[in-house]
Length: 172
Image 1: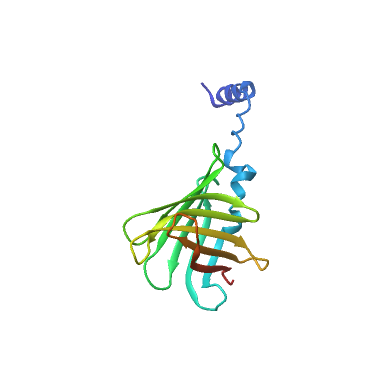
Image 2: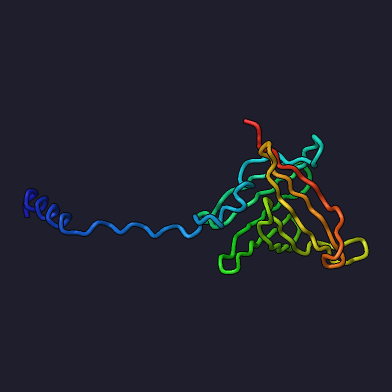
């Protein structure tokens, strides 16, 4: 077959082909998957109310926007990572935290007013009782994010302070 005949055959076949199907919509682009987007960014992390930097952190949307991943890089000590996602069937957010020590921590919760609240058992107190930790993430007017942790050794009946961090956008 000559080049001209091959070109005509190709044009005829292309003309009769149906247009390519458009890709299905991204299910994780739905609004409910954006509830934790305020935490996405590159951060310098400080003890709240101070200029004492304790870490840097990269928070990014991953897996087609279906999850939020944190890469925690403390200035002293080991690193850690979390992966947070929404279960669309239950409306519950789940976070898996893995630090520099063996083991993992599971948190769950979701949006409460203008915050993200996640709760899970993490560590023990001095008497060996399991700590139930509640983390509340809130967006500040200045673009910072506060991660306020409270702990309970009586399964949530009473709460006390655990940690208080402020994520400030990285300069530059």
